[in-house]
Length: 348
Image (spheres, rainbow, N blue to C red):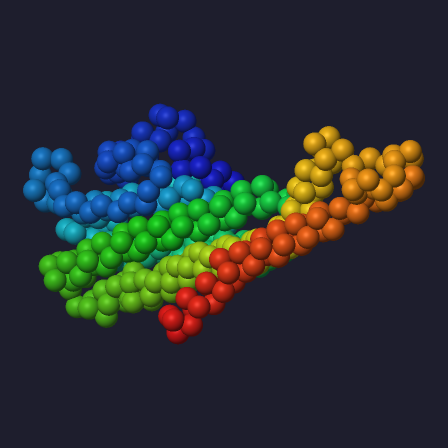
């Protein structure tokens, strides 16, 4: 009790705790259940305390997961002969202690039911889980809305937060499913107790139904609703991520298409100027040696007189460059444009 929240922490010494467990007939299996803190658990056993057959007892032990604050553990020993039920709740805060006492004060005949305390713990755990589910879902939805508004500078941090939110929600859903399975075990145990019809609760069928309603008909349905909420957010996160990736791929494809058009334009310009450049290189070789000669006369070498800068054979370069450029463009048009358009017409 008090302000302590750890199930393993006790507000008294080991000797006092040993004395309490002896007086409350606490079964030793509670130590193993408390140690398994990463998973919720519930177990029920019928045994005999001591050597007398009159001390038949029902031992029930439950443990909530400690992945979040305010986890609890409950050990209960019920003696059907006397109708006494000894229970210890571990990990209580002052608020939880007041809540348990308040709920017990509202109980009447069903207070004799051996699983009443487990129903109260289940309701307290439900309140804790609802708050956790709301906070987790809000965090995941925030990450979903941020998918379209992320700067490149914060991409790494956003990816980490997105994965963290997704994994937290998936883990929460798994824990809710596990706890729902424990509620099913409690419900089945409540049905077994009603079928056995011990004298101390015979004629209390309504109260037994009330306990079963607490375990599953009411609490279980709410858990199924919360599990569906988590599943819907996880599916929404996956779909939003796929949409974002798809939009990114479309943008990349469009950019590549634009770049392809630019490269095609560059290639076309290159095809136009490449033949001219090629023949310019050819005619600039010393093999032609058509340099102006001030002393030269028109002797049939292409230079009409002194100081002539342009050879009369320049038409040869223009002719070859034009023909080669036209041939190159024609070949490119036939191979790239005409053949593709003809193939599309044949397919259509």
